[in-house]
Image (cartoon, rainbow, N blue to C red; front, side, top):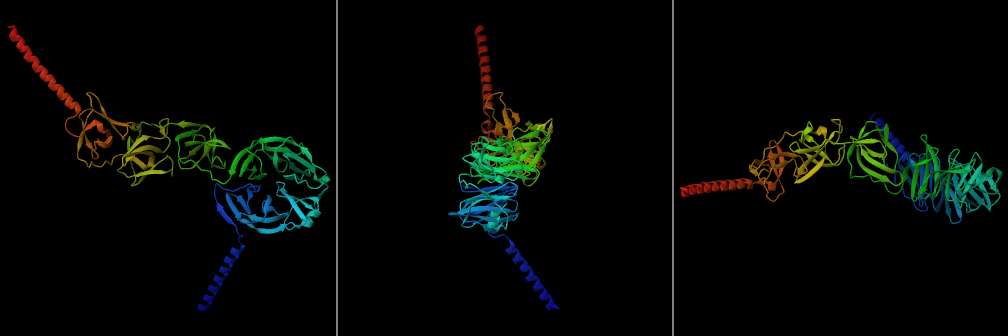
Length: 575
């Protein structure tokens, strides 16, 4: 029985090992995948680009890349030679390459896990494929020549051999004009569109291609794309929509330099236009009448600000506002509702998309809102004496964080214990007498330096834990002039709150060792610590004012005595 169990265990282990090996062999070969919420891509002057629905592909040297759902997958050394064309649909990628005089098409499959191995190649020595293109609906097309005859081939499909495809092709009566660049086939109208010298031409494939006719007033066109019933043009002057029935154009938006490929895609009921320009892929939303910037992919990540110069609470006055992931990526991460409070951190301007405010919610969620968003600034109450917590506070925990900015998970400037004294500067935001942001702005002194930051309301309480002074010495207030007052401050700064106004000669306990060269001296006032200018205290003996008063008193006494003596002498002389 024990032997049978042992054999069964061995069989189970062997089966498990075989399953693991099978899974390993089933995985895509030579693929690498990295996830990055801000996808970084590298393009050079020879890179090719194509897009379909929510995915786009591009080449860099001889490697092939695909970007989908904020994931980038690569297939190193996917092809040899120079890539002169690239197309993609929802399952396949076609790469047109040239080695010397020969051209060929490599056919790739892909899925959510990445790019698979090349399935096949199309191309022979006697057939030269000159252009690869698509119709925006997932169908592939290309131009090919055999012994000087031009063929326009419809719907490249997996497993179709070259001769079978050419048998279904339209034969062009005039030889293929190599000066034509971008091509586009309109299935419904049976028209083939092409670009030559920046001008757009059209020919009817159904009538056999006799000659192209120039259309539209666009003279700087570089690439074509289409949706089900619209044609899009990427030109140096902008992105245009071309009406196939009237051959008239409408400018959708201006661009920096439209010299690369253009693609129309639709996914999640949204229309997008992708263009490749200036070593970057730009994504626009399309609403039927205009293109609006949406995203940019290039070789650098967007760097969010880390230092903020505004830092105030605001209240949304419009119905709702979108919070975007960055000014470069207009993906909506969250929203703000009417009447909701948020923290404005700084202003940001982006070349492609305009001006924004970088904001944060109390829970630490950060993002960007457009600068024309309707909101009102909420001011802070700076009179800490009106707060329930008062002017002085202390941490409630053995280690309480003091944050650089008033939101959750902000940078920690310092940590304090229950014995550390915090001076409350303001309550960040107050509206109609109500504290609307759960943080206090506070300052404290550590290692002789004033640290100013923010502490959560629930992490502090009124200050009660004053430790007994370890320096058993006193000093006297020395005002310097009769009738003048000396002020005690909450912090070693004349900009901080005034704790008390004292007259000359009043005594105070030292909270630290006296140093005549220090600008400030820390003292005990009541049950709190305070700071006084060292020049306005005297360590021992009489103060300058007291000495002055004594001198004045002595002078008065002497003068009185002399006056009495003088008066007595005058009486004697008179009698």
